[in-house]
Length: 260
Image 1 (spheres, rainbow, N blue to C red):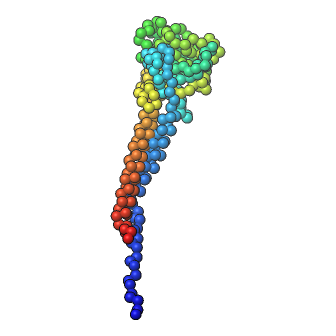
Image 2 (image 1 turned 90 degrees about the horizontal axis):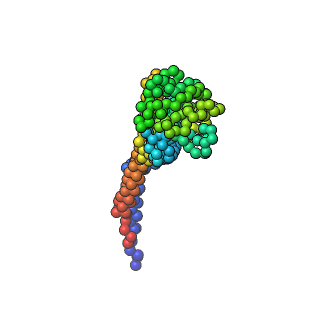
Image 3 (image 1 turned 45 degrees about the vertical axis):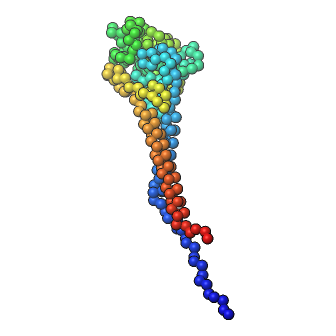
């Protein structure tokens, strides 16, 4: 008696893993978003913040306000800029930081005042609209005359009768000027690096016929959008990749052979 011939068992079904273009697109979005967001965050963190305790800039920056400042590579300081600098750049000042307005730069001759109580820079009278309106022009017009050395700036507060600044030290060595090496940065916004309002640059000095417009920096706003936009793109790509991967795995399980 011969053994019956049985058919060979069926070959197992091979489930091919197919490439998913949609998954690849979501992964690209996630990686690109992460890179762009990281660049934005790094740029935002390149700015610094300081709180202004005193009232020498009260008409522009109320006491207790936070400001954002930055000094990028190659940046120049112009007349009218608001700057943060090391307090010990002025004689007999303790360590700390001060915030004042630049009213003259290296090579300028600055004098106070003309018959209209205006400062004169290189012989040109400057009308300063940012001065504290609560201070009378005569009280603000403390007489001084200084030749600003190269590589320095000459600063004053916007509340001129309540400001310890370059004007007080014109008779001291250095004529009260602040070396650029003591400058921490140019103020670009009021608030924090995460929520701030950009300063509109003054045109007082260019209106007087002096070259060099005051600094305007929109980089902080742009960098915040870059960081936020990158984060959104990353999340969309990441979530899309997860959902696409889960769906692909579910489809593979449906076509896989069941165990007998």
